Amino acid sequence: MRTTFDLRTLEAAPEGSVVSIGVFDGVHQGHQAILRANVARAIELGAEPTVVTFRRHPKRVILGRAPKTLTTLDHRLELFRAAGIRHTVALDFDSDLREQSAAEFTATCLIRGLAAKHFVLGFDSKFGHDRQGGAELLRELGHAVDVVGQVMVGRRPVSSTAIREATELGDLVAAAEMLGRPVAVMGRVIHGDARGRELGFPTANVNPMHSLLPPYGVYATRVRVVDDGPPLPPGLPSVTNVGRRPTVAEEGADPRVEVHLLDWSGDLYGTRLEVAFVEHLRDERRFEGLEALTAQMRIDAARAAEVLGSRD
Image (cartoon, rainbow, N blue to C red; front, side, top):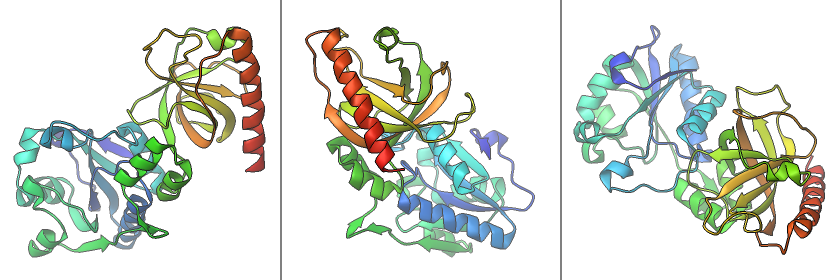
């Protein structure tokens, strides 16, 4: 998949494109329905399936604050690629872009820049100044548009907001149902203090490049190397601690995501990992000493292996 970050370097595919527009935070089941429809229409028209998204949430400019993100831009790009999107335009939503009318954005970016042949939008997709752009405007301008309806899980509408709420509450089942996959974080493995290795449980310290994490605690997880690490099989079983490590770290320490792989050992520094949360095992708590902590880590690892083994 090719990615464009600057409108000045935008190059349209010779065959034209089918375009979807949105933040797509989480790339949840509603978003996936849009992406599937985009790819199907692009195949039918012989065009390039294309997404226009934003590097950061537009609400950061519009409201001065933004919701916690479910997926970083890197994670979204990976999920777009996996869905069959061949070109993503990731724009900086700044004051200039905010003030651009929907008609002007359509003419300059979507038609002239991307040679859009067709549009596939979600039922609530809006763009341009004051969110005036959408399916109705595009049709008034003479463009063909498919609108994908709202996706429901049970009786609940799927939305990024609902998934954020479920994740923050620790309802991994509800969040996973709406996502169509487990709640996950993606980040690069960074150097830690090697405490886990000293205790016999070497960990990969993952820097989660977005702000939303499930509640602090220990989880049974599965790990996938994204694109630049050792060729490990996907879904490696692991046990992961999310939190501030109260037994060994100073009070007020930054939260960490520490992953112990159950069936593999080796050097993962610098590697991008996707860590999928399968089941909450226990809350994070302070132990009286390293011996008690190590004993609990053995229990956590055994419990994670049991949980993950039962779901193979």
